[in-house]
Image (tube, rainbow, N blue to C red; front, side):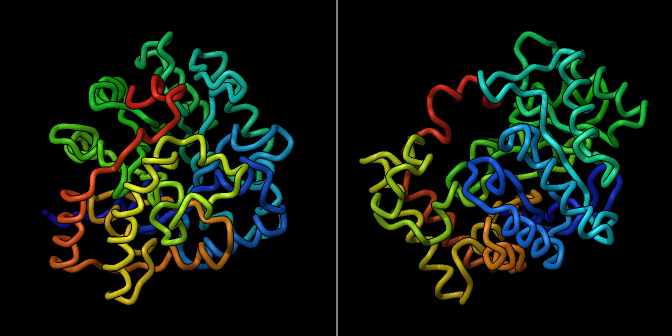
Length: 329
C-alpha cells in the first residue's frame, strides 16, 4: 500500500496533519460552554489548526458559530492560526439540503453575522448535495460569494466521484469532506472518491475517523452506551451488529497496545496514510490532545490492519436508513 501524506494547505493556508471536528461540542447540548472553549484551546495548542464547524451543529443560539465567536473574542491571538471550515445550506429540522442561491447566500450571511468579524470563513461547504439543484449551479453561487469576499473558498461534502468531477470542471473546490475510517472505507474504492481527489489535486478532509467511538477502545458491550445515546439509532450499534463490529475494534486495540499508543491514535494514523486530513471530534480537552498526537505506522502494522479488515466484516450502514439517500451524491 503506498504511503500518502495529508494535505499541507487548504484554501491557500497551511494546515497541520490532524485537524479538529467541532460537531460534538454543540450538536447535542451535552458539553458545557466552558468545556467546549477548553477543548478548542487544547486543539490549537496541540497543533490541530483546521477547524470544521456547522450552522446546524446545535440550535441557532448555541451552534458552532456562537462558540467560535466567543472563543476568538476570548483568544483573538489564535484567530490567525486557525483555518476555518463551515458547513451550512442544510435544514436540520427536515434533514434536507437547501442549495439554491437564496439559501446558500442566507447561510453564508448568517455565519458571517454570528462570527461578527472575529474570523473569516476560509472554506464553506454545502453539507449535502441538493437533488433539486444541479451541482454546477451550486458552484456558481459559491464562486460568486468568493468573488464578493464573503468566503475564501468552497468545499464539497458527502459527494461521489462524478459530482467531484462536475464541480471541479465548473470551479476547483478547495476541499472534499468525506467519512473515512477503518470501519468506513467506501471512499477507497478504485477510481472512487479518494482516487479522483488525488488525481485532481483536491485536498481531502476525513470526518468520523473513529467511527463514532468504535475506534476509541471504550466500547465493549451495548451497556457501554447510555440508554439515551443517539448512537443506538445507528445500524452499527444495534444488537447483532454490535457483537460483530466489536471484533474489529478489539483487533485494532490489540495492535495499538503493542505499539504503546491508543486505538484512536492508531485509527487516525491510518486515515492520514490515505492522504487525508483527519478531523477527529473529541469533546474532552485530554482526548483532543491524545487525538492530535502524531504517530507513524510501520509496514508491518499496516499489513496487520489490512489482515483485520479482510477478516472482520463491518456490519451495518454508517448512518440510519433515513439519511442514506443524502450520502455519496
